[in-house]
Image (tube, rainbow, N blue to C red; front, side, top):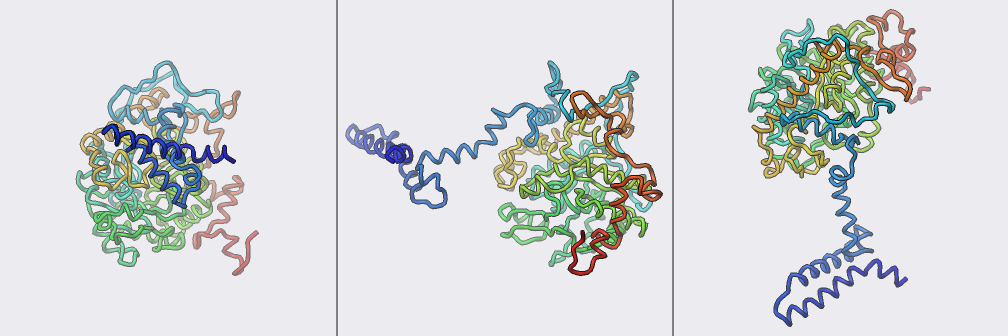
Length: 547
């Protein structure tokens, strides 16, 4: 018992004794006050620990128990800089972050002494090179047209663009730097669902206006969609495309959340929301509740925007719901210009742990399903596919293009280009680099001109690396990459081409004979254009449970 008490209170008692003794000595010899002042402060801390009721460790171990919380707070930094392996991804590895920093700052990104990866480990992937290499293409020419025959203002988009990150989640200076970098490199900057802020407009970079369920920038006082306000914003020449956000990879099925302490007067004005309250977007869109209504909404947005490309973004969840949207396309003949598939591995802000870890389909599965469904019904040529989810390197781009993507977006990669150090404090308003904070002093450290150059260089150098990679494979354009070019290791002794590893449907196959592909055929039969519910649930009596 005495040993237990000594281990718990020994350090606190020692602080009390030291304070008493050194204070008496300082009084007697008229000096030496630093020691009693420090020990006295520790005594006061110990008294506070003993009197508080919120933390049992501090009550049982006054003073010294606080070390537990100090180390807990420092754990991410200690792990990242001292103990993390180069290729350990938490969520991005030292190698991945270093690659972005080097390309953004125009440093040499060559790797000496061979790869750090275990090339015989399961899931290792590579691209096969050719005996006949091709000339290295100009990466600035990697652009494609978005806009089908229902669109009157098509847009020439870069292959590699900035994914959705809102003003509010990011600082004003971060938005300025991203948009200026986009203008320098002629690529697109997705606004995120927080609306178009003055900082998006300051440098004139191309914008993709993301329209979330909160309809920020085009909402009524009640939070409903306002067609007139939408038309006013969408008519701006800087807005090149409209993206309806159905769900996002970080938290699919969850409305966006901006904490009250990050809502400045500017954010409140941009979003048209009150200050002093958390800003929570609905999980679903109030403007539509069925696939048919959703397609009507897309047609309305296209008309109100003057014929600009309109599409939607989703993280794939219940597969029959996406097929229900496709059936609605066939029924209404309203075809979106593009679809962005967001993987569940994505995410720049805060989300509930269960949502981040266990909800929604990862990018590859979602992208392949969307691509196959569109091919299977003969709509793939009319709809461009974007992909977003942990894209950092040229090989990441090549990999998703082999799975069906036409272009890619990145969020955290461009955050690294701005100087993000992966401190994982985005939701605290205490971002150490000024990227994800509304603190005016913290964000002042982010110098817009310098960081805009880094954003531009990261984009250019990544596409240049892609141009060199595909040239080694005998290709001149990224869109020539096929599933036959990529290889995946399935065991220590076996590898498979992507074309053999994944199913790829033939054009029109779902309409001709859906039974050829049991999984796709079954999901196709479950989907219906009139409802997001599967056919069995929709036909069941009220209160019944489907088997």
